[in-house]
Amino acid sequence: MKKFILLALIMLVVVACKEEKSKQHKTEKEVEQTSKTIVNGYASFGEKIESESSISATDMLEKFKTMQLGDTLEVKFNSKINEVCTKKGCWMKLKLDDNTETMVRFKDYGFFMPLDSKGKEVIVEGKAIIKETPVDELKHFAEDAGKSKEEIDAITEPKIEFAFEAHGVLMKE
Image 1: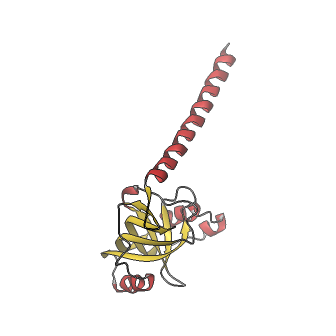
Image 2: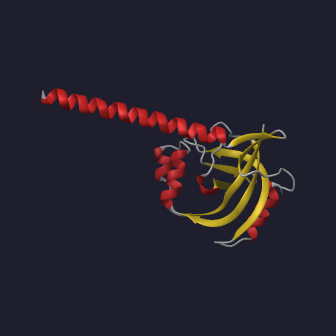
Image 3: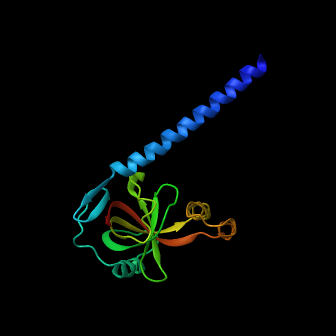
């Protein structure tokens, strides 16, 4: 009888966990779907922004180079997506030039990018930031990006980065 009760409890836990994972996955999909609208040939994510008056990625890089650690700047620029979080789409890296990129996160974790958006042209609006990213955060991002264990273990020092907090994104359809 005790074995039967134990087996029943284990089955209940397994079923409950499976349902919770299914609900979580559905919720993430719903967030992605509800936060996206199409406007003038662009998929819009987050707050509504306009495509006009954005600067180039090269101009954005020049602005980053004039900033100091801790500085912020409200700006809108266009670029190409180099990389996207493969788990949720909760961050992306945008190309500034052939050797430089900026890590983009989304204001208040309020929206995500499609997982298949790598290589797409985007316009982002928000806050440019010069920040020091700690080792544990760098390792987390490398894991999200699907890097190998060796690549993750090779991360041993914090990194000064060009970061960006977007409150709105337009992605060319």
